[in-house]
Length: 269
Image (cartoon, helix red, strand yellow):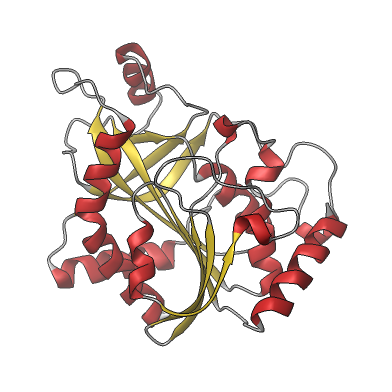
C-alpha cells in the first residue's frame, strides 16, 4: 500500500503543483460546495493511479483543488462506499492520500437517516461520536508510518472544531443538532426493527459512510469535523418509504446551510 500511496501522491503533485491546507469529503447530493471553491485544478478519479472510481448517483468522482475563501483546499466530489464492492482499505485509500498531500484537518459531510425522535427531516447533525458496524479499515498489515496500531478513540471528532461550528451556526441562525452517527454497510435502507436497534444502542443517525474515513484520518493524526444532513427518519410513526432520489433531494435543499458552516469554519482555522 505504501508504494501505491507514493505513486498516487507523486502523480497528483505533478499534475497540480498545489499544497492543500484542508481536505473536504462531500457526500450524497452535497457536491455543490464545489461551486464556492475558486478552482485551480480538477482531476477525474479515473485518471488518478490506484484511485477507486465512484459508482453511486450523486457522487461525481472528481478531486477538486482550489481556494475556499482564503483557504487552500482539496475536495473529494464523490466518495467511495464499502457496499460498492471495494475492500475497506480501498474505500479509505483517498484519506491516506490527503494526508500525504499535507492537509491539516479533514471536513466530512454525509446524508443520514435520523433515529432520534427529536430530529426532523432536513436537520443538520454535527457528529460528536460514532458506532462502527462497517469492517474496520485498520484490520490487516500495520504500517507504522500511518500511526498507532491501536489508536485511542476517546476524542475521534475534534472538540475544538465542533465548538467553532456550533458558534458559527448560532451566529447565522442555523439550527444544528449534535449526536452519534452509526456507520453500516448498506446498501439496503434500514428496516423498522433495525432503526429501533440503532436507537437502542445509542445512535442518533445512521448512514453508510464516514466512519471508516474518520478512523483512518484519526490514526494519521488528522483532526476531523463531520456533519450530516438528516434526509429521512427511522422513528416510529414517522417512517415512510424512501428512495435514493428522495435522499438526494433533501440533501440538496439543506446544502446551502452546511456550506455556510464549512466555509466559515475553515476561515477560522
